Each structure stands twice: as C-alpha cells, then as structure tokens.
Image (cartoon, rainbow, N blue to C red; front, side, top):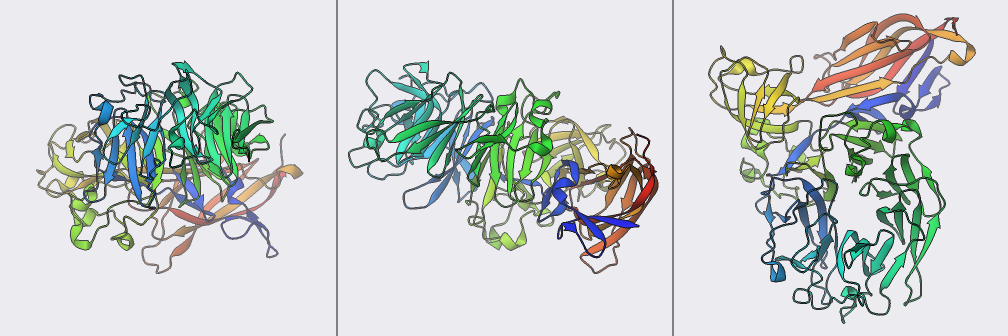
Length: 627
C-alpha cells in the first residue's frame, strides 16, 4: 500500500515511503478558503471598520494619504463625496467643498466602473495635499474634474483661485484623467482629457516640485506629455520601482526616467500579444505588474508580458462577466500574501461585484471568496482603544456586548498601529478583511413573532440569499441556531432582515443576540490516481486527515470518475472534544477502485476557522484502466 500526502511541511518524495503532493498542485477548486504557510484553511471573515458612510452609496476609492511629516490620513471616496477617517470617533467625516467649489453639489458618478484615482502631492511650501480625479466625476462650473483636499476642503486643482501655482500648457486645459500618480517627483495624469478631448494614449506630467511651484505647472521646462505609439486604449498603470508600467488592450508600455531635464521620460513598448481590459486591476508586486484581461491574467516586468494564470487559464473568459469586465478591481493583502481581484461573476443576477479572486503568491495557489466588494485599500490607521473605551458607540457594533466582541484581545489598544487591508462596497460600508471569522456580523435589537421572523439589526449589508446564523438571543432562545441548520435571508434592508423561520410560537424576544453570515468553505482536489500513466486504476482504502481541534467539524464527499453524484457524501470528520492536542488525525474509510477519485471538503461556520494540516491517501494499483 502506498501513501500519498498533501502536506504543508514537505514536498517531493520521502525516503520513508510517503509521496508528498504540493498544496498548489492539489486543489482544482477552492472557495472561501486559502493556503497559508502550506496549510489549507477556510478564510477569515471581515468586520465593519467604521459606521456606514453618510452618503450610503458605492465606495469608489480608499486612499492612505501620507503627509510631509510622515503621518497618515485615511481617505475614502463614494459616488459624491470625499471622507476622512476620524481617529477620535472612529467615523468617516464628510469633507466639505470649498473655495471656488463651495456650491459644487457632488461627484455624481453614475457608472460603477468609473473609479477615483488619487495621490499625495504636497504644494510648493510642502503643505499636505491630496490630488484626485476620475473619468466619471461630474465637472464643476469651470469644467474641471481634477480636485484636491488641502486638509480642510475639497477644491479645484485647475482653478487659480484655489491653486495659484497651476499653469496649463498653451491651449491644453486639463479637464480630468482616469488616473493620477506621483512619479519622477512630478504629478502625472494618465489618459487625461484635454480641452474636452480624451487622450487615450497619453501621459501628461508637470515640472519637478520646487519653491516656484513647478510641480503644478505643465508649461515649464521638464513638463509636457508623452504618447504611446498605438491606437489602443490605456487600460491601467502601476508605478513599479523606477519605472511606470502602462497597460493597453493588447500591449504594454514601460516609462523610464532619464537624465534629460527637458525630456524626463523615455517610453518603450513591451513585446506581447496579451493585454489588459480591467482599468483598475493592475497590482505591482515582486518587480512585476499583474493585471486582468479577457485573455487571462498577465504579468509584466518592463521587459516582457506573459500570462501568469496557468492553473486557472480559462478563468477570466468563463467566470468574469464579459459585459461588466471593467468592474474588476485589484488589491493587496500583505498579511496573508494575497493579491485580490473583485469581479462580477458571469451568469449572475448581481448588478455589481459579488466574488473576489485570490492569488496567494507565496503558495502559488488560487481561490475564490464570496464577498461583495467594490474597491480595496490599505492603512495602519484605526481606533486606539483602551479597555474602558470598548462599547457600542466606538464605531464597531460588535463592542456593544462583551460576549460578542470580535476584536482580537491581543490587539486592543493597538488599533492605530496594525496594518490593515480595507475594502468598500456598493452600500457605503468600509470593511477590514481577515479581521476575524464572522462575516457581516451585527447585533440584534428586536425579533418579531411571525411566519417569517423579522430581525431589527444594526446597520449592515446583508442581502437576499445570504445564509446566516443567529446566536445569543435571550427570550426567544428557540431561534438560536448553528451550522447544521442555517437560515436564509428572504428580505433585507440596512437595518432589518427577514429569515425563513416561523417564529409565531416562539417565546417573546427580550434582549441580546447577533447575526452573522455563514462562511461556506469548499475545497476540491484534483482527480487522484498516481498510477494513471502506467495504465492502472487506483484503489483507495482510506484517507487520514490532520485537523486543527479548535476548527470545528469537516464534511467530505468522494466522487469516482467525475460522476455527477458522490458515492460517499457528507462524511463527518469531528475532532474529539476530549483531546488536549492542537491537532488530531481522523480516518475516513473509502474502499473504492476507480480511474480516479476526487475529494471534496466542506464546512459551514461563523464560529471557527477550519485548518487542514495534512491529508494522507492510502492507495495501491488497481485493475487495468478501461481506456
């Protein structure tokens, strides 16, 4: 009998007779889970970072604004306003329009894929300033959609009254751009609109910032524009060290700095037949820019551009809605070594993104998260709480009750020092990813006795179809449930949900309780038969699973020869509640011969994170294959 093991510690072939399979090559489908340190686990949940934005509309950008003194501010934009995070209250305060824009009504962004781009760029006196723009921002009375935040108000970057140092090129008034970035000590507008004409292959740049204000002038020596030698549309950009990568529909260009003060940039084409289609999908990491095109996920290092999605090579064509492809938005989670792309799934009733594609660049594994997120961002800003500060008014609803507190105990008092991955959604909520295990957690304040129970809840983003678990309700204790009997949300608003549970005969609700969205973990192995190349079927006697004892139960299906239904279904693997060990081996009998076998592992939970350290498959050669 041979033993094949999917493990996190060793790969290759062991002299002890155990053949090890690399985790990255072991799973063909991974949903709401990921491989971290070569351990397969269900994903961590998300938590509300702050109360809902006042505008209650789609989040269009999350920015870490770095000030000249090294301090930081957290800014967020929705479809109408810019907000700043108040570290004292834990709330995003709406920033007023000022100066020449005092009467401006708002961005009024109508298309979901017209995201906002921004960058920190101090003025000539080194006063902090955040410059931002976007293709979908409604122009102000002067015809401008390029604005800046000066620490007090949002003003017009191109208005002399607001920004006296601004100077346009002759007959080249800047109206807006798709992206803005600092590069080469200059302010760069990528794919700008000049005199109301879109310059889809152009990069407009200012002079170098100095005491004369040249950093805001586009008519001085060292300023100007460069244009790519193509008629393709610009579809993304990323600053990658000393170069800037420009993505196009079927090509890529690299912008390099020169020593010529009059011609500071040199542009050259990167050889490729592949391109980018999602304008805000580019992510720079490890000397490469990865972006999403309809032909696949591509990576460029400034010298060449190649596909990097060999393990999911039809994903962007089959799984992403081709008509809403430009909704795709890229992000970075440094804590779990993950690149993330939020996208709208094909053949779905959703009108916005409802999935997140995850690439673990350390493990080279791919997975899918069931999350409804519009944009991503990062910060190390948050509430700096002491023990006595924890209550329901602190910006985190879970702190209203001690028994439902989600905050990691070891991080209380360190909220403004911990690196965070943030995300926004269509409803104006800001989340922290990988915060804890509960998803869309919120507290309950009332429950009706009705044929379909209606729960009054704190402001939240539950939607119809969500599977939820209700816990810690007092009075109407019969409604408390677990992962073996989840409820489905049949109606939802920001402050109430209806679930498919008849509570007519339940006791009257008195107080307490919380509701969380179930994390529905699923992992499917590649078809297993190590003897296939020799012409033999494989016989599997049993499989051993090394599970974390604090991670709850796990269900397993076993499918033979890619049949429609498993011959073993929902086999329960439950760690012993008496063991004192952190992990435990649990055996599942298979006793089946097949051309190949597929193992599907499943868990529904809001209370614990499943961790599978190792999986040993005990097998031997079977009969000759039939074909």
